[in-house]
Length: 258
Image (cartoon, rainbow, N blue to C red; front, side):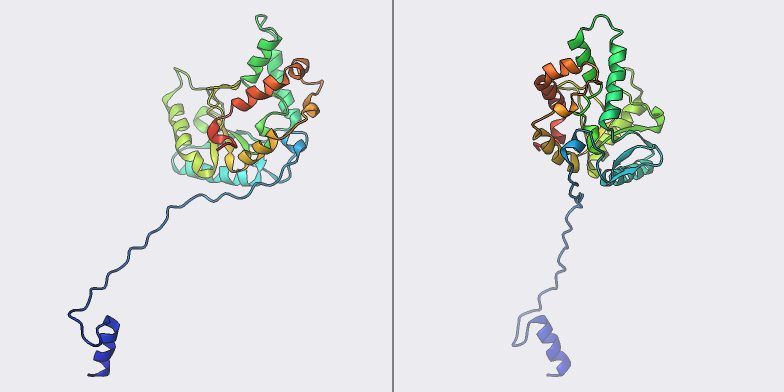
């Protein structure tokens, strides 16, 4: 037996005799589907959660001038690149808001609703809450929330109505199908609580779920009962109801309970 033949029999496992060599079978390599990997959220203090202090690590979107936490903005930029590839031009309308900026928006809506003589104080507060969160209770304080529009909407935040143009509906459908892969969840569906449906409001849930748990643990909200907030007296007298309405407005898929 030559050395070459001996080596071949050893390779085939037939040294000492075998009926026939077994065919060599190439094993299939199983590749797991790619799963998005999200970083750990940076810690926020109670004052940061309430909008009374600017969170560390906010970064600017040069196109819009809006701010968000760094990882939130990076994920938004990746989503924007994907959108551009698919023919959509995303526009960031709003990101981080301080207590002061939220108060400005709240008071603006209060001024508008005061012109409606049919609304008493409770009706006016409910009307404002359907559009904007109470200062101190807004998720925009966390640096995780983005109001996203599109070039065809000219940067407007458009509700879904009977006469909503098909292209707008197509854009919202695209967001529903793609945003979650980049960590974003649509917060307000208008099915419960106080806030109306907001198809433009997206939360970076790898961080916001964590901050929501911290927010829910806050015991003292007296810091946000600012006398310069319109209807602050009503808010103070009815705060448990106000807080419950704000919390129950959130889409359960975005909340800390999931």
